[in-house]
Every structure is written in structure tokens, then in C-alpha cells.
Image 1 (cartoon, rainbow, N blue to C red):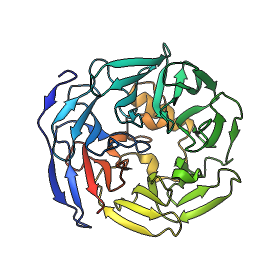
Image 2: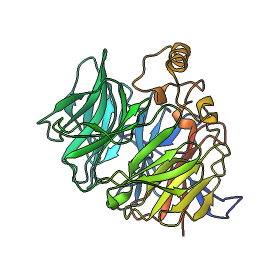
Image 3: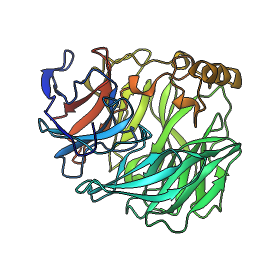
Image 4: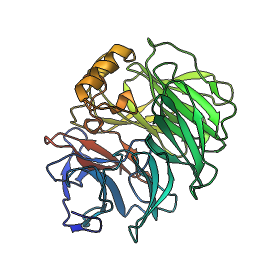
Amino acid sequence: MSKGSIFPSEHTTRRDAATGALIHQMTGAPCINHATYFLQSSFTPGGETLLFCSYRSGAAQFFEAGFPDGAIRQLTDGPAVHPFSAAFHPSGERVFFVRSGAIVELDRRTLSERTIVSFEGAQLGECSPDRSGEWLTAAIKHGAQTGIVAGRADGSQWTLIPFPRTIIHPQFHPIESEWIEFSGDPAPRMHRVRRDGSGLECLYDHGNDEFVVHETFLGSTGDIVFTVWPKALRRMNWRTRQIATIADFNAWHITPNRAGTAVLCDTNHPDLGLFLIDAATGARRHLCLSESSNQGSQWKTSRYALKEDFDRARSEAKTGTLSWMEVATDTVYGPQWTHPHPSFSADEKRVVFASDRTGHSQVYVVELE
């Protein structure tokens, strides 16, 4: 298999057993297949193409499929990509992704690749563009050095901002793009810093007994929405830091809509399926079941993993990792591809998620209308 290879559609449909919603199964290869991470949309802006990662060639590579039943095209080959690192440029014509210590830009039309920036000997986490696609950020681990990197997509003005703990999920503020919010791992989680490295501060000082996870921006409100696992979905005012509970519910991975009026989530312990939560009232709409295995013993607790948990997991995985959440074992957080990670299509009429209900993780799309 090589980039540019074309494969027949693997599309099938069914009705959800709980809600009756129409579900498209987009992949069927007997291997790991999953959509992009829950912080990024897997659909192109026009909704005609779905981006996903697959191990069908033996290593993690990116593919795209015409929606709903178009052919599948391989986008990358060679050394494995970071499987959850892909993010569309706002135009949809280009894809940013991480391969080892480099952020790469892929032209979807020609499949040519351009290295935007490379940090030799380092490992980068998933990359995240601002709304203009002009700026990018990613977590970095280089030996004992941890932090985030940020710079322009043209390869200029790149800065490494050090931080004394592991960082995951750096994201640009949707309105004030000079600000980056990021997660420190373990507690306290929520921090912000300007992209030039100034203004570093902790937004919420809490201990390991309060399991804050999956924080992101509540759409164009600019506030932060986060889960206190497995108890509640909450929001924080970006300016005052006032915290309010949206819903007492075991929301897990969360993705707000652009307006910030609703929050999409999956659930675990128990897995009730995918839900859409009204950000003002906390009212919930059941979208469908996930039927995924949701592996990871850590999610059965209400505290962060401690150093001994991480050391044991890393030893069993026999690999160095950028984040505890990327340890490929169910000892701590579990294989990420066993988690649904739902995200919206650009028109917010569909939701993409992953499920290993068949024995292999596959990519699914549920129709909201």
C-alpha cells in the first residue's frame, strides 16, 4: 500500500438499537481504524470527505473516504504518523499532522508533504491550528524537557515554551488567538500561556482527588468546558474563572458545537452511548449507543494516575510515551482507539465516532436529523 492508492468503499448502514438513528459504518478492514481526535473534526468543511487513521498497511497512516459511500484513498505512507494528530486547515485543502518530532502539512490534492518545523530527537503530541490556520501548537517531549511549541504554519516564529510536567491538548483560544490553553498532567490541569511564552498561569488549582479531564473551549463563547470525572460537566469563565456545573452526568470526551450552546459527549462507567447536552440547561439528548469497549482501568476511579501507575503502564507497554493517555495498555488509560472520541461534522448535522464493537475499531457516523 502506498499514498494515492484507491480502495473500494467499505460503507454499510444500520439503525441504532436504542434511538433508531441512522448509523453509517465507514470502515471495515480487520485492523485498527479510527477518526481524528475529539478536539478536531474528521469531516472536510463541505462534508463530502471523511479523514481517518488506519493500520491496514501495518503502521498508522491517514486515509480519506468519500461520504457516505465513496472510495477510500490513502494519503500518507512511510514512517508511521502520530495516529491522533491530524487537523484540517480551515480551507479543508490541507491537513496538518505529526510524524515523530515534526509537524507536516499535506496537500490533499497532490499528496505532497511539506515539513513545517522539526525538532530532532523529540516527540510531539497532536497539533492544533488556530481558527485562521496561520498558527499551530503542539506538546513536546525532548529528553527530560517538556513543554509546548508554537509558531506559524509557514515555518517561521517557532517558540518552545518549557513546562515542568507533561503537557497534553494545547489549543488556541477561539477569539483571542494569542492565548493557548493546555493541560498539565497530572493535576492541576488547566493552564494558559501566550504563544510568545509570556503570561503563564494556572487557571484552576486542584489536587489529584479532583479528576479534571478533556477540557476544551465552549465554542465561540471563549469559556472553557471540562469534565470532573465521572461526576459532572462544568464550564469556567475565561475572564473571571468562575466555575458552574452544566450537568451532573458522566460525560467523558467532550466536543462543543461552534456556538457553544451544546456539548457532544460519549460516556463510560456506565457506557450509555453518545449524548448532546444543552449548555444552558443540562438537558440531554441520546444520539446512539457506542458499544465500544472503552478500555482503561483508570476510568473506573475518580482520581488521577499516580507515578507508580504510569511507571507500571510504561513498563508493560515497553515504550516511552509523550503522555500517560497515550500508553497503549489498559493498565492506566487504555488504548485510545477503544474510546469513541465523538466529533461534529462541519454543518453539525452528523457525528463521527469510533467503536470496536465488531472486534476491531471502526469509524462510524450517526445522523442527527
